[in-house]
Image 1 (cartoon, one colour):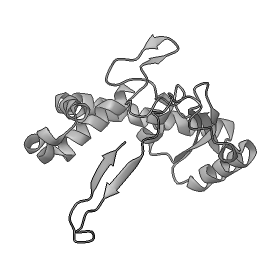
Image 2 (tube, rainbow, N blue to C red):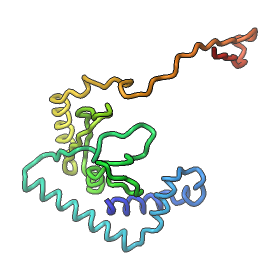
Image 3 (cartoon, rainbow, N blue to C red):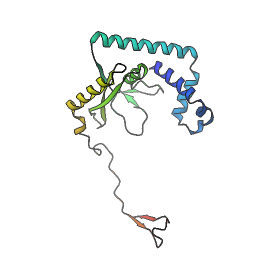
Length: 198
C-alpha cells in the first residue's frame, strides 16, 4: 500500500501543482494532507516505488501463468461497507483504523498499480444491512474476461434482486411535518414563496 501512496500522492501533487500552490483553501483537509505528503516524496522514494510496482506486475503475471486463471477473485474491501458520510471505517475486527494511508482496501491497490481491469459487484449484505462486494481482476487488456466473470457471478448470486430495506437499520425518523406554501398575490411573478411548517 505504501507503494501506491508514494506514487499516487507524488503524481497528484505535481499534476495539480497550480491548484495546490494557489487554491489550497478550496481543498478539503484530506486532499491537502494527501498533496502535502506527495510533496515530501523524494525522487529516490518515487523510483523505488516504481520498481516495486513492476515487481508486483511480474508477480501477478506469474500467478496467472502458473494457475492458468483468467481472473482473480477477492473481496472488494477488507471490511463491509461503512456508513455514508464517513471516509473510512473506524475499526476493522476491533482494531482502530487511524493512519491516513489506511489498509482497509488492500485488494484495490494492486489493480490500480498494475493497470489491471477490475470490477466490483455486490454479493450480499452485512449485519448492518450494508453491501459486501466481490472484486474480479484480470490482466491488462483482458477487460472482456473480467466483465464476463462479473456477469456470471451476478447471475449466480442475484444480488440485484434483493436490495436491503433502507430503513431496517436507520434511526426512527422525525414525525412528518405539514408544510404549507403561500405564494401570495404575486404568484408566478418570480417572488419567493413563503413556507410555514406546522
